[in-house]
Image (cartoon, rainbow, N blue to C red; front, side, top):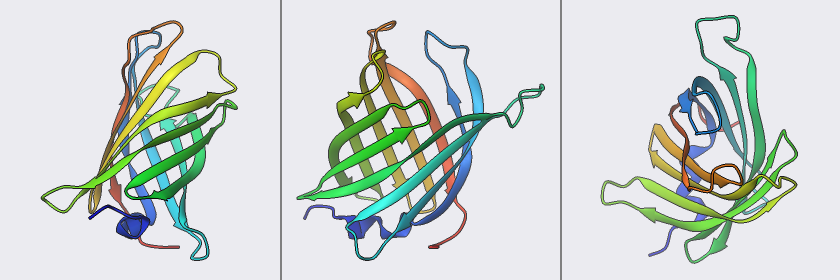
Length: 164
């Protein structure tokens, strides 16, 4: 039985946590994150908004870092699409399958099918693992400066509240 958008209903709400950004072309850093999922019952999509802030012991602590918004769209038969607009102007469309694990958690693995308005990006992918009240995710990418497809972000978030 394939996974549908209804299986993701429990993710609606606010998630908070922290992560680490690393990549050969940047200085590694820790960040804190807030991710909000919302729904409109008339549309078969889940909207998300992701914001991050620097997590450090210096003057950069709480400095805004990243902002992204988009939609998780159920394409049918377990296929999902993530459409992402980022503060830099980059737009990404990622597609992939969702699966329910033996433990009852959901995994969503998405890879880029289009990256617009950013000539530096070659490929990106995301792996999201929803374990009811915990979300672990990784983002991998390759760029024109680093052609090796590798991890850029890893984070763990906890579900803080329910639907809005």
